[in-house]
Length: 385
Image 1 (cartoon, rainbow, N blue to C red):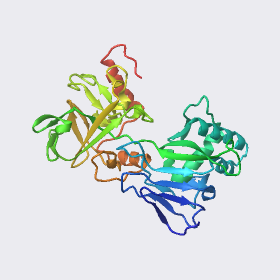
Image 2 (cartoon, helix red, strand yellow):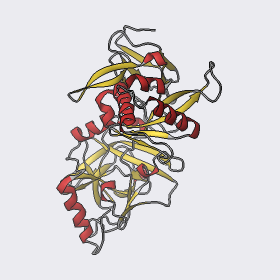
Image 3 (cartoon, rainbow, N blue to C red):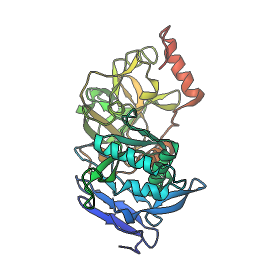
Image 4 (cartoon, rainbow, N blue to C red):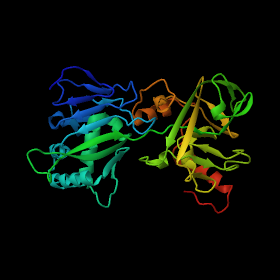
């Protein structure tokens, strides 16, 4: 049924069904006020071919009236399944968007194969890929149409998001079991928070203290020699077994002296996205992996992460190494003890991280290459990953 409102809420634990495009541009927002997920369901008539301005380019996209989906909560954290978007008869929507009309039968076959075999497609930073690619393949045009669906749902932020697309058979009452409808189930990949592993020693005014023993009100020592008060401590237990992307969660080990003489002073374990403060920039631990002195811990199946929020985003010392404090980019709810349940899309989190960090993020380029080369030089013969 058409709707003329400008915003529509997907209530926690309930399903919002869109049966026809909205009359005016309407944003569909997941409420996320509890510990269960919400579901946004588009019937086949709920999505049509439309156009949108994506970073200055007018593109064909799947449209429900010109709005975008907002506040979709990623899954697989804190025991929450995560929000879902269900698109009924994805093969029929594909036919509507495939302007060339050359791959309709092929996509229908591949989607059916995926639904019956449990294969998934992924969209990472605008790039479409497949899980079990040897058995499930899409050509360039088919990938483009899937990306057009994501862009129609989320707008340009879909080009920086990480999404999973599962395919599910649905009984077709007008046919036999060998010709089911094929629905798509879209979820957001787990957003990884920068964190300290349990047991990490943090330098405070009362000495080095294990992160799990810290208290709100404690003061940490900063690289400038100052003191900053802890105003919040987040805790999150993560099970790696069965995770969709365990390498995105697996702790990074930094051996003593890997960065420079005596730094870190002891083995340091961080989540992959936790940034170290090196040479005036913030470098995520995962960018320094060399599988020798800095590597991911393949031996653990569960890890408990902590993070420390100061009065302002800054640096503190963990095992004698300068690392960043917690910066709330919209992901506080990922922690088990958070009092907020709202999260934002990965792309928005990354945008805030880049804009609000106390020092520049170093993710590529000559600066990162020089830091990695300096680390490698401490170990003759080491090849960088």
